Amino acid sequence: MAKILTEYVCQNCGHRAPKWLGKCPECEAWSTLAEEKIKGTGSNQKVSSGSVDNKAVQSVTKVEALTQNRLITGIGEFDRTLGGGLVEGSLVLIGGDPGVGKSTLLLQSMGKMAKTGAKVLYVSGEESPAQIKLRAERLGVLSDNLLICSEICIEDVLRVVEQVQPDALVMDSIQTFFTVDLQSAPGSIGQVREVTFKIFQNVKKRSLPALLIGHITKDGAIAGPKSLEHIVDTVIYFEGEKGHSYRILRAVKNRFGSTPEIGVFEMHSGGLVGVENPSDIFLSERPVDSPGSIIVSSMEGSRPLLVEVQALVTASSSIGMPRRMSAGFDHNRTSLLVAIMEKRLELNLQGEDIFINIAGGLKITEPAVDMGVAVAIAGSFRNQKVDPHTVMIGEIGLTGEVRSVMQLEVRLTEAERLGFKRCIIPHSVREGKLFDKKSSLSLVPVRTLSEAFDAVF
Ligand code: TYD
Ligand code: MG
View 1 (cartoon, rainbow, N blue to C red):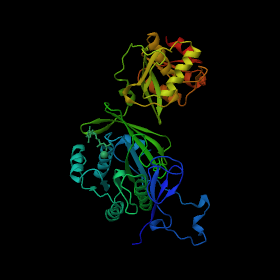
View 2: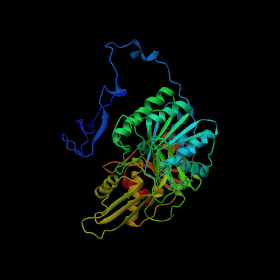
View 3: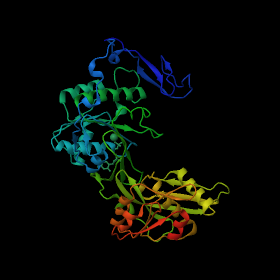
View 4: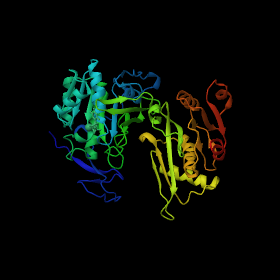
């Protein structure tokens, strides 16, 4: 076998070095050099014939249509996040903190699929076959079609795939595999990327769906910084707060799905259980009649979630340096809302510590919850309660105006389903359609944050 030559390439500036260096001599960034095969060696080799064959270019109307066969995994919330099942030949990356439940999710869902007759190959570089069996027993998914393999050399894994011809492949985790083409250790950027690329080529050739598990590094990226995200078809993050049993599966990229959907689970002793009506759960423990607690609506994919925002405003003990902390809500957005309230509503929040919490360990990024957050802060500051049957929906602009949000009707339907009586909504909503609807909800359109305060306090 010819010796394959590798070099180290800076992922930041592209500088090439013959050996590994801690710091790139060109851009001076640390730990950015990754091992790569030198072009023209090994399997990268491709000799140009000088002419392009006719098949390389064709009219888009002549291209053969792709039939998207989807495999149903047996866990509804997982299928929903995938956009309606696992597409044949797709490469899915599941990222998450260690211990959040990635292996459990995949063993449980693929195990269920195996029970319905599909042949699933579960390759683990982290656990022994005996450990996996123990877990599969606990999850109740033992089946002859669930094949376990603990091999960490990707070339060997692909040979096994060739032999068994599975209907689905799981690799747990991508950081434990290595290719013989590179000398660096498993888990390094170069290895992770090269291994993923090899799997990618293989699954596309076979129309085999493959699920890769990836651990998240401390700075929040799936190791092999972001470099995997553009190779794979679907990127899903599995999130969960320590101390909560809820887990959220969030698709951040999906070539086979229209909206970034989420799936909600609860972790039990017998594995993950899908939560069909997450709003019910997120609202179940809410205190009624407490200042600083507000119900808001956040669209998560195609699903409206009603969640509780809690704010606590107390006089700051450190002069000039009040604390601003938020869990589950963007910190900068909190500062912005506080600034708007100080300027437009003359609320003197300067000497106050402000804490925001989204109950249930959920993370919300939607601006439609702005109005609720602002009212929660003001409520806690003034020690004033808001009627517990009120939902607040609206984005706040810099002049204190309430701006419209998308999919208001879906949100209102959910609020009605859960028995809420009143919704504070943006004024700009075209009234006709909404107000005609026979609904038990009374809608209060507001133009500004100040009008919203008048409506609730
Ligand atoms: P695991 O799937 O091993 O996490 P990851 O692969 O993301 O590192 O999940 C580990 C946690 O899940 C562990 O703390 C125990 C818990 N767990 C349950 O609560 N119930 C179960 O049925 C299983 C299998 C795990
Ligand atoms: Mg694991």
